[in-house]
Amino acid sequence: MNVAIMTGIDELNDQIQSEIKDSLISIYPKYLLENTVDIVIISPLIDMSTLNISFQDFLYELRKREIRIILLLGDKDSEYLGYALALGIYDIIFDPFNEEKIIKKLKYPTMFSEIAKLYLNVGGQIKFKSDSNSINSEDINLKKQIINLFTLLGLNIQNTNQLSNRELFSILEKFIIEKIV
Image (tube, rainbow, N blue to C red; front, side):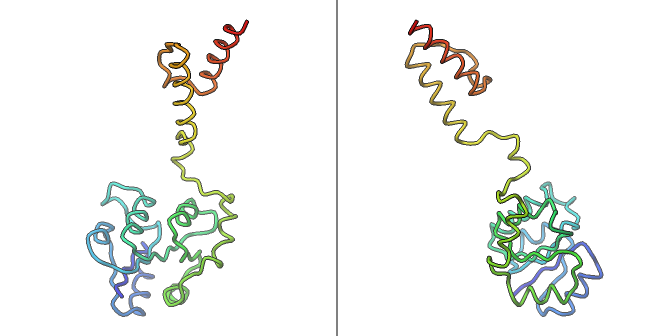
């Protein structure tokens, strides 16, 4: 079992490494993406400047490689908690953390039943920060259906992609009312 340690806290890295056989301290995130490791002990305190991706994207890349992550977070209000849960990262230790807690987590992975209550802390719904400005697939499908109705009714509406669904419905409603009256 290859364990990479990357907490961003040098003293903690050294303490953990002294307790875990076959472990290494990594100071470059890129190393973890280019080499085979089984488990990563990591925190958002690491220096991400050598990669052009966010900490969240780095966690995603690690999980894509089926790497088990033991994530050290400041508290349950951490901006990374919901993202970690969505990625299936259940081995989460909140501050204060020490090598004993980390070694215990390494030996005894967290079961979903133990972490389930944390889903409630993130509002019962996992939401990524970038999602707040994006259009969901239902809205896109609805817009396509409205545009198809325009085509079916022979309406030639320009710049439909720039109009909201509400504006498109309003145009459709006016057209139908004019035809009925």
